[in-house]
Amino acid sequence: MSSLTYDLTLAGLSVGSAAALTGIGLVVTYRATGVLNFAHGAIAMVCAYALRQCVVEWGWPLWAGATVTLLVLAPGIGVALERFVFRPLAILGGDPAQTLVASIGVFVLLVGGAVLLWGQGARDDAPELVSADPWGQLAVALLLAAGVTAVIRWTRFGRELRAVVDDRQLAVLGGIDADRVAAAGWAFGSFTAGLTGVLLAPYVRLDPYGMPLLVMEVVAVAVAARMRSLPVAVPAALTIGVAQSQLTRLHPSGWAAPLLQAISTNLFVVALLIAALALPRVGTRDALPRTATARVPTPPGAWIVAVVLFLLPLGFAGSDLHTSVQVPALAVVLLSLVVVTGRGGQISLGQAAYAGLGALFTALLAAGRFPGLPRLPELAALALAVVLVAPLGLLTGWPAISRRGLALALVTFAVGVGVSRFVFAQPYAISGLSLGRPTGFEGDRAYYVLELLLLAAALCTTWLLRRGRTGRALAAMRDHESGASAAGVQVPALKLLAFVSGAALAALGGGLLGMGLRAFDPSAYDPVRGLLWFAAVIVLGADSTLGALAAAALLVGLDAGTRGGVAAALIGVLAVLVGRFPGGPYEAWRSRAGRGPGRRLTA
Image 1 (cartoon, rainbow, N blue to C red):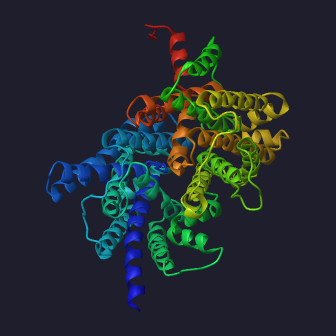
Image 2: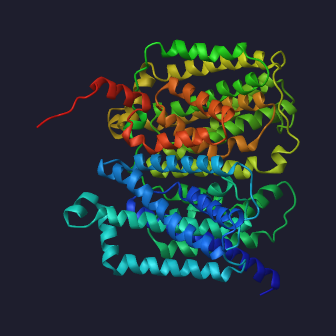
Image 3: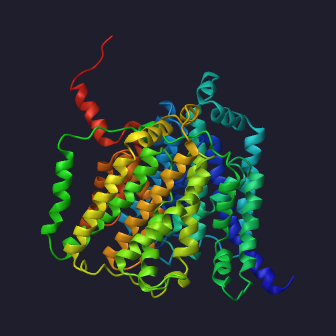
C-alpha cells in the first residue's frame, strides 16, 4: 500500500469513526424512543462549545472539562429532553410526526441558544480530546457499537427496550418502566452526540450553524441501517469515510471537474440522498400532525392590524427601512410552506433550497451568466427565475407521492443539504456574483412598495389554493390521504401541485430577499434556515397566511432589534411545545380564554 493511500485511509477512518458515533447515537435513540433525533447535531455543537468554554475560557484541565461535558452535560441534556419534551408527547399519545416537529424545535432552540451565548463567529481553538491518529476514535466507535449491540440483544434491558418501542402502553402493562428505558436511550444518544462534537471540533469550523449541519449530514449511515442495525451503520460510516478520503486523489479536468470535486468532499451528502430515496419504508406511517395543520380562526381585526403594520415602514428611513425590506420577502418564502404544509399536509424541510435557487438564478440571469440566455433586466430575471425553479419542486414532490412523515422529511432535508453543498457552496456558481434592484426601484422605499405588491400576489395565490375544488381536494388529502384517494381525489397530482407551487413561491421570495440585500448570500439559504422557517410556520399556524406574515416579522424583527439567536430560541421553545398548543399559541390562548378563569371539574 502506497504511503498516500495509507494516509488517506487513516484520514477516512477518522471521519468515518465520527460518523459511526453519530449513527450509533441516532440508532439507539430511535430504538429506545421511536424518535429520529434531528437535534443530534445541535447537541454535539453545544457540547463542543461547552468543552471549549471550560478549557479555553475558564482554564480547567482537559480531563475535568471532558468529564463534566461528556458524563454530566451531554447525558443531562438527553434526560431533560426525554422528561420535559418527549415523555409528555408519548403519554398524550402524540403521533411520530409530532415528535419529529418537537425534535426540530429542540434543534432550533439549541442553535439559537448557542448563538446567544457564544455568538455567530467560528472558533478554531477547540481543545483536542483525542489525537488526530484515527485508531483511538475507531476503537471508541467499535467498542461502543459492540457493547450496545450486546446489551440490546442479550440483556433484560434490551428486551425491555424493544418492548417499549413496539408498544409503550402494552409494555407498561407488562410491568416495564418505559420512562426509565426511554431516559436511558436519550442519555446514551446525547452522550454519543457530545462525544462526536468534542472529537470533531478541533478539525472543523466550530460555529452554531455549521457543526449541527455537518453532523446531521451523516444521518445517512443510520438511514442505511434502517434506524435499527448497528452492524450495518458502523461499517457503512467507515466505508463512506474512507471512500470520501480516497476520492480526493482524483484531479479531473473539463466541465465535470467542479461536480466531481464537490462529490469527493461531500460523499456523505450523496449517501444521504441515495439512502433517503432508496429506503422509503423508514417512517412511512407517519403523517404531519393534525395539530400542526389545524385551521386557526383569524382574530377579529387581525388583517387590518397586519396591513397597517406592513405599511408602517413606508414612513421609516435609513437603516430601519433597510431592515424592513427583508420582511415581505421572507413572508413570501414562508407562504410557500403554507401551501406545502398547511394546504397539502406535507413535511418540507428543503424550502430554503428553492429560495436560494430563486435568488441565484435571478442574479445569474441579471448578470448574463445563465447558460444560453442573454442578460435580462432584474424584474424579468426574477420572473424567469421563478419559472425555472418551479419545476424543480418535483425534486421533493415526486418522492412525496410514495413517502410520508419521517421518510418525506428525510428526502426534503437531503435535497436541501444537497443543493446547499453542490450549488451554493461551489465557487464556480457564485464567485463574483452581485445582485441589484430593478430599475426605478433602487431606493429602499420604492423597493418596499414593489415587495408589497408581489406579496399581495402571493397571498392571492395561497387564497386561491384554499377555494374551489382544488382547495377542497387539498384539504381532503391533508386530513386523510387514503380516504381522499378512495373518494377519487388525484392525490399524486395534488402533491406535485403543492410542491411545484411551493417551489415557485419560495423562489419568488428568495429572489426578493437577495435583491433587498443587494447580494447573493449563500448562508441566508442554508438548510438550518430551512428548519427554522419550517418550525416558525408550524408554531404560528401552518394553515394560516396571517401566521406566515407574523413569522416573517418575528424572525426579522427580533434578530435585528436584539442579539442574534433570540428569534431562533423563541421559535424553538414554541416548537418544542407544539403538542400542547394545537393550532399554534393563539388558538391555545383562545381555547383557554373560552373556558374562563377558575373553572374546574369536581367529582
